[in-house]
Image (cartoon, rainbow, N blue to C red):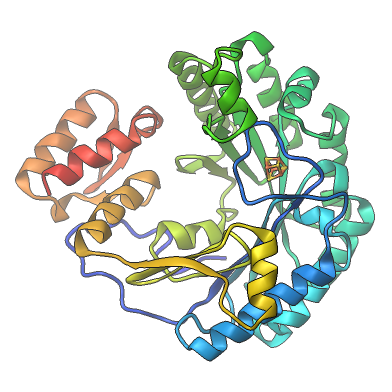
Length: 394
Ligand code: SF4
């Protein structure tokens, strides 16, 4: 499967994209059994997901969007992504209900990528089978680690064996396309054996792997513990060592490091996320979700009860929106160009920027090949700084 533009190098002097039909949809499923100590997502704590309320809210939002006439779904979809929260807490019937709500005629694209996120403890064989029959063809599993004390520290509900069993469920249900998430940069006092976790994942041979560094957000229990001096985050050195070890070992095992956090076997790049990285339009449904239709960016209210109230009254659940200024569009184009293997076309850079890129190459932060400049894993560790440096001289 492929999307136009996914592999094309970026020309930094290109015109902004034309507004085009929305062919990608993100749907937020807000329910989690409990909130992990580091999480600041739009999450509602519940023992099971309220499927009826979820579908009713989404139906109200779709109707309100049709009435408004800006973010309209009038095309078959290339990608549909159900994220959370914990979508698997919604149980077996949820994806068929979502398919009916969006309309299966919109999901008839033969190359549609329909991803749903799942956590091991709620991704039962029954859920796996029902989702497969509903049309889901890609699963993203939140495994994070196989180190029991670290799973307990994070507040995850599954143990190491639960992660292994979830991958088995994915395979037995017939999903060939799936991804596993690992988290790095856990506090050093946990003694999390990062190399052992990589060993386990490499033995599983998933087609796609995502790596995320633990981020300390101020408004979370972890953020408060760090502020009070009760917890010490991993050092930058430790985070860099773990990231670079993973980049090296996964590349040696045949995975393409195609985006700062993502690795794939050939043909298994995440198409939905690539929509974000190529500046293509997408619609976000559900509380806390974001939408983009150049030059308009919009985001929904985060609070689930407020989302239910607004959609129940026939109103858009929008929190706010902005029209991107050309300077923001340019900065975003630089950032998007640097974060993926698409890279930047050398001939689209002014002389001063070429000098800067030459310095990056000399210090192993970037490589240039056949007129395309791409960051290395070492460069990706400093991506935000490099983006600002490049934008500053464009
Ligand atoms: S399972 Fe994921 S979304 Fe839910 S609380 Fe934990 S980190 Fe947040």
